[in-house]
Structure formats: structure tokens, C-alpha cells
Amino acid sequence: MHGYHPRENARLQDQAGTLVDLLHADTAYPPGSVVLEAGCGVGAQTVTLARRSPDARLTSVDISADSLAQARRTTDAAGLTNVQFQQADIFALPFAAESFDHVFVCFVLEHLRRPVEALAILHRLLKPGGTLTVIEGDHGSTYFHPDSRAAQRVIQCQVELQRLAGGNALIGRQLYPLLVGAGLEAVHVSPRLVYVDASRPDLVDGFTKKTFTAMIEGVRAAALEFGLIDPEAFDTGIRDLYRTAEADGVFCYTFFKGVGRKQSSATRATLPS
Amino acid sequence: MHGYHPRENARLQDQAGTLVDLLHADTAYPPGSVVLEAGCGVGAQTVTLARRSPDARLTSVDISADSLAQARRTTDAAGLTNVQFQQADIFALPFAAESFDHVFVCFVLEHLRRPVEALAILHRLLKPGGTLTVIEGDHGSTYFHPDSRAAQRVIQCQVELQRLAGGNALIGRQLYPLLVGAGLEAVHVSPRLVYVDASRPDLVDGFTKKTFTAMIEGVRAAALEFGLIDPEAFDTGIRDLYRTAEADGVFCYTFFKGVGRKQSSATRATLPS
Image (cartoon, rainbow over all chains, first blue to last red; front, top):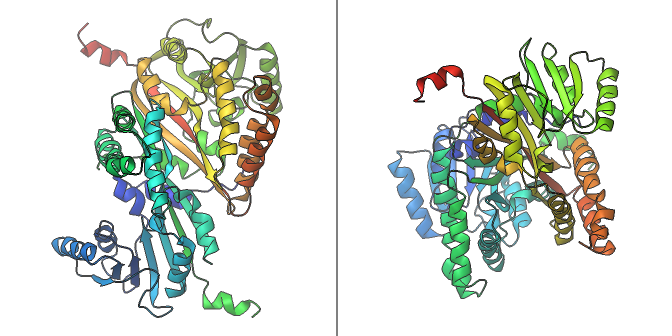
């Protein structure tokens, strides 16, 4: 049973005061590095990323002009000057091969029909020796006390809706094979378990209620429209999720963070052609 | 989202080179302290516990004389001299109230019909200010890639068999309410997620195959006898669990460790009677 060395993860979790830190504290790019954020959405991660790497130059792209406009307002409001935005499809990015020192992707692969192809495209954009960092959740990592079939069922509605939309809400656990499959080297994946009980009231409110349960609550209309569940069963499931936020409740969810490296020129030179 | 401070857990995980370390590295009792291990079984944890607290005096009890004999052989073979064994039922322990500085319980509550009552009994045996440490797994924390309903079903057989025997294979997530319910104070629970992919070959072999899947494989006869599943479905599930140990596979399981403290006399004195 040797070989379990979660050192870097643990060291950085050590600094984690918030969920944002838990996910992002170990990502900081060196001064002068040129970084691509692929799929920035409304900039939820962009602010953290740009703040943590103040002397890196960040290019954040998204397919939606509306999202980009919001992201720009958010980074402007935060006084950030090291981010430029560009509208682009992740499958048709307007950049030459080996344009970036590092690439960052957060909560994007879960929405894509062809995640390995997207990673392979991003891999090509990396300079040799550069890193590709991916963060994804996994709804199948969710469990709680009191346990409830009704609550499991509403989560399953979200998983099914994401599947119908071409995505995968269980993608977190797959980061290792996805990154290896896209040709990255030295792939390292570390789980980031968010454990919530009544001794952590900020997470009870901020994660169990306002992040996870609110997200599931948000798919009510779609779940009913697709006939996945009836209204009473949905509302029972949501009630049972909120129940886990009471004094004797417990809630667990795991995010996964994977980092892979593009083969460096030196390494490639030593391989037979 | 403030308030997530997994510092002590992270610091100690930092030292974790093995699964044993992941579970036990943050348990060491001071010289001279008198410690009860309740439910030592064949001594699997006793050796680790006694080695990590060489100057504490450990009393390890179990209901089974056969298990105790094996435990004694194991600690003798390890050259440990700070452990004494005693046969006793956890619900009828032959010790006076406030006999122990600390109490340790590992993989025991999952087998008990009345876990809070057991914890309350152990709580009474603690001196004021002493700690009660509990470690349990949670089979509902298991997920993997490739996902498989057949594999989920064989795990569910184990959960159901444990339930039929009066136990609870999903107890890990409940440590917080159980410890609070038994009257412990300053209860702190930390999850210990074992994440396994092909980059961690020792865990692929030592955990996914030889610990978890072997355990599930071991309930085949009982699952068939109780009519929980047919032989082909069981064997498919086991095959799919082994499948997660291949090069593109991923396996996740979480243990929970909870520590609570008995109210100290000083604290009690300041409370209204």
C-alpha cells in the first residue's frame, strides 16, 4: 500500500480557506506567461485566475458574446488589467499551434459531446513543456445524510438532462483517462472533496443550499418538460436535499482537478522518430 | 463561502505515504496516557495504534476470544509491549466511568445495531477532556470509471447483507450526528478520500483489487443464499469492479474520521447545573 502521496494537493488544501481556494489555490502562472482560459463563461473563474497570476497574460475565450460581455464587466469591476477576451468556439480556436504557455479549463468539459477532442485541440495550442489544467465536478460523487431516494432522483434528473444536451455530469472521475487520451504527459489528478456538516455553517449555506441544491432546483422546469419526473416527486427530492442542511445533516460532493504536461522538445528529441 | 478550513486534516495527509497513514497519521497519544481500543478484532489497527503511541498504555477489547488470540499473536510478533487485551462486549464493558484518557474505535460502529448507545457508553468511560476517535468507511461513497450498474449492484448486495445483520455500511457519512448525539463536544469530522488511477499502481493493486473488490467478492455465497442476486449478475459486477483497475480506470472510496471531546470539568463548572 505504498505510493499514495497526495503531498502537493494536501499542502495546497492546507491554505484553503474557501471553496475557491480548495479548487484554485494550487494554480498560479509565472510572470510573463501566456495563458489561455478556454470556456470562461461569465468569468466566474477568470477573476480568481487573473488575481492569482497577476503578471501572467490571460486570454479568455467563450462561444457566447453575451457571456463574454458579462465576464468583461466582472473583470473590469475587479480592476483586472491582465485579461483579454475573445469570442471563439473551443473546436475552432483562432490560435496557432504552440501559442500558449499554459491552458486552463474549468467546468467546460461536462458540457461537451467530444471532450477528448477538445483536450487534444488545447494540447496542440500548448508550447512544449506547458501545462493543461482541468477542473470538473462529478454529480455521482454526491451523497448525504439523511439519505433519500427522492433526493437521489432529482440529482439523476440533472444528470439525465445534461446527457440529453450532449454533456456528462459524471465527468470529474474521468479526468485521468481523458487527459491521457488527449496525449498529455505526467497526468496528475487530485480529488477535492467538499464535506459539509453543521460545524461548517458557511458551507451549509454557501455550498449545500445555495450552490448544489439551488442548481438542482434550477432544472425543475426542464425535468418536468422532458417527463423525467412528476412535480410532487421533484419537490420532495428538493425538500430532502435541504433537509441535509439541518443540524444533524451531512453533505458530500467532490470536484476533480487534473494537470497534464505537453511533452517537452528535449523529451521528444530523445525518442525514436 | 468562508469557513472551509481543512487544515489539520491536510497537514497530516501531507505525511501520508500509505492508506494506513491516511487514516491514522493524525492519531498519536501522549506518553503515559491510558487508551481504550474498543472492538480491536484481529488487531489490524492495534499494531498501528500501539506503534504510533509507544509510551501510551493501550487496552484493546473485543467480544471474540478467537479474534483476541489472533490480535495478541500479531502484536507479539510486532514486538509491542504496550498493549493488553481483554474480552468484553462493547455494550457491557468492565470498566469504571472516567477510566480512560482516550478511546479509539475503528471499523466497529458499522456492525452495531445501536451505534449511538455504544458511543454514549464509551463517552462515559472517558475522563473529562479526553477524546473519542472513530473511523468508518462508507460504501455509498464508492464510484468508479467505467461506471457499471452491475458493479453498483454487487456493492448494494454487501450494503444489504450488512443491514440484514443489523449493521450499516453507509455509516461513515453519519459520524458527525452520531458523535454529537452521544454527547461529545467539539466534534470534528474529516473525510479521507482514496482516489485510485493507473498513476498510483500500488493503490490499484492494494486498494481497488485486494481491499475493496476482494471484500465484495467475499459476500458472493451470502448474497446468493439470501437471494439478493443471481450468480451471473454477481460475477458480472465483480468483473466490472476489476475493470476499473485497468489502465483507463478510476476508483474512489471515502473513509471518515471523527474526533469528539468529553466536556472538561472546568467547562462543566461554568455551566448552570
